[in-house]
Image 1 (cartoon, rainbow, N blue to C red):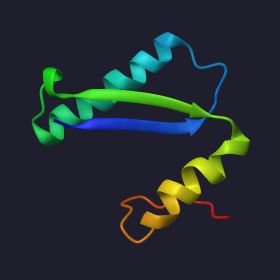
Image 2: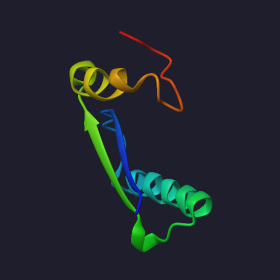
Image 3: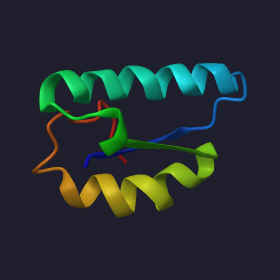
Length: 77
């Protein structure tokens, strides 16, 4: 039962339709590669103010996992 949590710096231009498209495309990737079904998948999208990114996401979520991330960020603090 995969759960996708997408966290990013806020993008005011991102419409509800675009959010749904992102969720649908991510869902299709997991269905294709993990054999998941629509009923087993959930997707959350959370936007953060740029000033919140480092203390809320990078310091708490990204930095402690740098040695195990599959895709490394192209930035650091």
